[in-house]
Image (cartoon, rainbow, N blue to C red; front, side):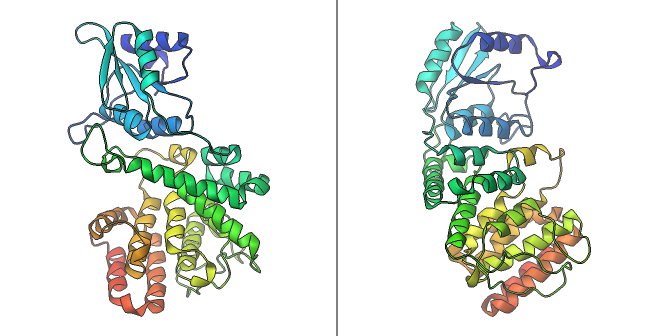
Length: 387
């Protein structure tokens, strides 16, 4: 949060003063309150993601220093990211409160003692990621990532890099299935949970790139038509990173007539979903879904959103997941109930979005007639705006 003079009160001032003289690397949080969630205090919209991503990209930070307790800040810091949070409590006698990953709470009169204890309790996941992948994952936008990938292709398009990303995804999945020390269930079950959609997507990009380099396709899969209603042809070429980055960045298309950015994104979506449903491309539905989930989710892309902007891209991911679940149920992990709840996101779709999905699902119906009735129901739900 902002530490400008207009936003700093007496408590924030004390925290800022301590922060400026600390030698321990730390994250200083001005945690302004958001709306109450299930009776628990939250951070102002977007601030939770900043906190989590800041800690995730800087594993050397062991301590978060805040001016007050906040349920979401405490949970993100201690449970999701394995660090410790120190906050100031002056409700009775000024004390510095330490909350660590094990769920315990300690109190100190001396702020230096509190920070020292917090650093001892912190248990961040080890960061042994190869430097090039660490930089790739921390970039602000997918356009930056595509450019970086091209500049460092000899280091990131390798079997070793692909294996490293698989390890990171596995490590993350193991972490989020640990018990939540501050609530019931597992870490991933918390309403404050922030899923990592970026690492799995890059795992797919690198793996796809490595496979394509070993058996280069004659050309890259890309939209050849500028009309959403044109028939969709199942791709027969092997997928490569150009298809995936094309979708992730809304790369401009070389078509007879100029196509706007919004329509360009939908044309890439058509192509990517068709590639997922074609065995010739080598892109599994599960892997393709990781890419669709990641679009627009890098830090710089989220930050560019205006407050209250519809989550259209997340709606596309939800529809894709439901589509795949009907055709290849072994390729998704969500339950039927979870999948149905995801479809509530479709209310934010535009008319163009719905037209695109109408023809994508019609294409799927002809390719997979054994689930035609279920696909038709999905298509009608989207096109008729039925919730």
